[in-house]
Length: 196
Image: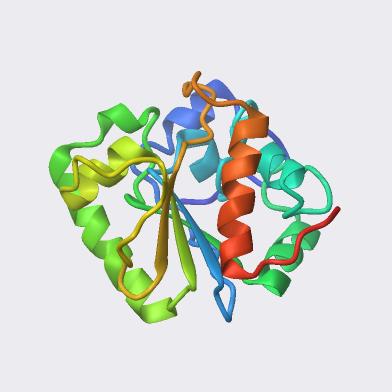
């Protein structure tokens, strides 16, 4: 399926991306892998992670000093932002690669299968740190109902594991500032240089 490039998708166009896949963004070498739950329809339409306007991922990365500017990915990931992430070793993936309007549409089987896919991705690319953005999805994918927010004392396929809040606007418990604090801590653990 062709993605929409250079403009925001219409509501009707978004529906056509149900079930579409989004390309992983993988730096080489990979130091920090951010992992969402699954792509939304807007993300699939423009093939750029966390693309829906109102998602707080990119503002939080900037506030944490991980990106020099707030990146607008609503029409796709700009080449300069892609290069900036690659230069410091940041990647982005998802537990489940299939786009839905809401993560709640995913079945338990899809989430568990996505968890196994993520394990293989981490084994193949060996990031220093994996930051899963969504504690409930992590619990479902890996059968660990007691894991909490923050750095885990257990490794994930050889990587340091952080389970962090999801940046979706539906997550009312977090703000850009609290997300930036968590994401900044994971970046520091991975040795990512930060802007002041």
